[in-house]
Image (cartoon, rainbow, N blue to C red; front, side, top):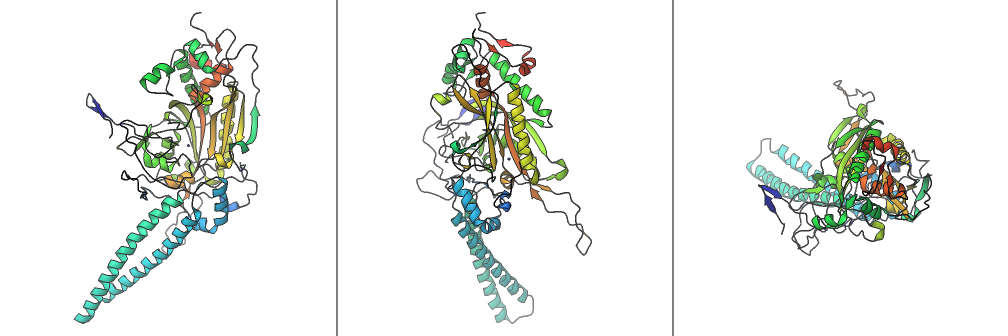
Length: 523
């Protein structure tokens, strides 16, 4: 039962825990709602290749999606009808079966390729039978146009009636079969860049190391202790008001958040990105089309009960949807956006000292970069995104490493992903502060974003009509420019001083009104 409150005529919809595996390769969709009155609905989340073994493989597949139709609260497993269909190239999957199977295995996906191919063949055969019956129905209709004996006409009427009934049944079966095929095929993950290492996270390759860890001649504090002594945030009050993993920022921490956002936007805009603020509630179908799972066990998405809407876990989702179901002029590409938003994640299963404090929270501010480009340019723009991240973090004086993430750590949409992990001396480890992913046409095939090549069109029709060039799906890329909580962890821990103060990096000072350091309040 959903809890609804009414204040001054406004209705507040509750969040409720729904159930889908966080693994982006999950292929079974069973919706169950928990009986709690107020519950959290759980939000889960590339350089020219060197002679890849399958040159055709940079062509993208579609995603594992969850069909968002409502299911009865029952223990029985039900196949859910998809709300939307991705533009999946089934013929290409069939023709490249071996390569697709290897990719599914390398990415530890449980997508059922054999079932997809069986359903595809069954669909093709059923389509042929439907077309055959339609042809017979048309022949009967044409015969009835002429002069006929009453008995012959009656015979044709009966034949037409039988054909119509048979055709109706087959057409209904075909619709159901196409839906089943979509649900299974959407579980197939994107293909993988040939240079991506195979394995789990520990198989990821070091791409670059920037700077070196700072040495301290005094006992190092973590950001929790620093924040408490400098009165920068309050977790206890936030836990009483909102629950665990929420926080209040206070005093200079508020100024530092604003400084980080404004500095990051300013720097990224210099590189030709258009700034955006985005909706922070989106339709569940848009979340699915971007490759995330809005409902289910261990999902990371907060879903709004009794609606088809979710809170966003990243601005990648609303920015990805801004050109949904449209054809973009090739001359407008690339489209580069830098978006500020608040993000909401359940962080299901996240616990322990490694995630304490600001490192893993339910709500945070983030600046996200997003690019839509021509298919042949996405590797180049992937390099551009990781270079922007490197420039931003090195200009703040951080020590970090860049990793080429292994297949087992890639979400379903990612063709290739680079992670940035910064040294956090108080936590005594490297922690992820950013990532940059090339999703090729995986998301655009689901979102329906295409462009029409501008090469000279041919005029082959007899009437002299111009035949426009066929449209292509854009490639999409995303990268985190600044995730505020983890950046605060880095700054507080790396720039702490023996007297308890924290030095503000030079690039941020103009955005903090010239403040150079944060001092204990007793001074």
